[in-house]
Length: 304
Ligand SMILES: *[C@@H]1O[C@H](CO)[C@@H](O)[C@H](O)[C@H]1NC(C)=O
Ligand SMILES: *[C@@H]1O[C@H](CO)[C@@H](O)[C@H](O)[C@H]1NC(C)=O
Image (cartoon, rainbow, N blue to C red; front, side, top):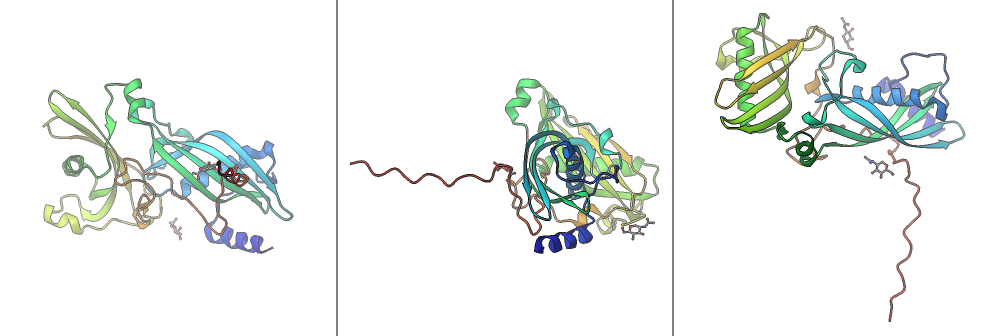
């Protein structure tokens, strides 16, 4: 009963993901309903992922069901992959493609606990292990492809600064856009020197496009209904000026992504080159699909 109360509070407090279609289907944690649970898991994970890129479900690796008196519960081991859609991109997930090996894939292995609540599949918690492909994979698949750099690489950030100035100078939008976050940095060495390829998200500010350079720092990001976000790709080849291309999305009335703390502190090695999926751990603790392991055998008696 206590679990039910906690769950009810959780559902109302968080508007927990429920299945978008098939509202008549009562979810009962049955194996043939796993697609419903998976959809709820994918949606919930993306709704709580506030930095970097959206993730897409790729495979169900394990499942464990627990039948309880008043609740059913299933723990799914699933694999997701990072897509090319940044979280500010309003494109529906099914139109977002996952990355190719040549771009360094990012894979998240997650354990997700799904419950049935009022007939709906509800995510109670999840924990993921998110990793980019190793450098060896990239070199085998595509020896000439650029490889990832940490998200705080100073030279790459310098190129973003220049690229953003260039975008603002050339854009036909009325406002000045500023950096929201760097999504990905990759690099490659050529005869002409080091090349940088950076993807970054930008946000509209309350300043006009032609704001003086020294005033740019004080420009405030617009929030709520009015805020428009954008996504840019810049490339800097050798000593040349960076090239930049941005797309600006229609205002969507979303929570300002930067209102959420940076996710990677304490979870991955600093500095990371990707944004991992952070755990969501409400009252219940998220356990893996095969956590019911027997205790280790006692040590063998000492030999003489
Ligand atoms: C924008 O979102 C907020 C919070 O979700 C909501 O209260 C408000 O009504 C929304 N405004 C519009 C115009 O959709
Ligand atoms: C998921 O569960 C499995 C099996 O219990 C465990 O080995 C794995 O570490 C868990 N994954 C995470 C990210 O906690």
